[in-house]
Image (cartoon, rainbow, N blue to C red; front, side, top):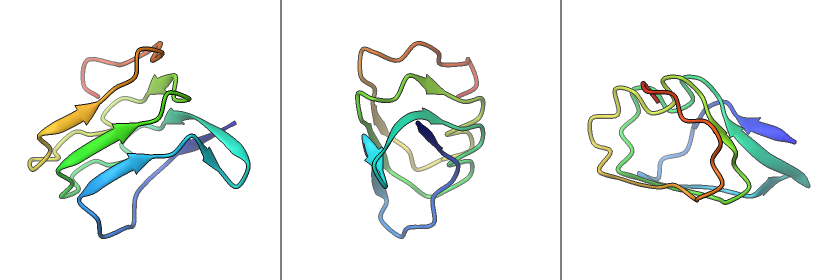
Length: 77
């Protein structure tokens, strides 16, 4: 398993994949997208946890698609 720790791409519509280099993505880590100019996020169903502040201060963010299997979303995600 692995976790998303940040984003360096230029796309504003972001898709969190189910696998990276054959490892299942299970977590979006704390502050992973903090302050970025992203507009939408689609989260794969393999993700179980979203870390504190993962999307905080993303003022352009208007849509997040969250699968039913997420076990933990902190209040300030």
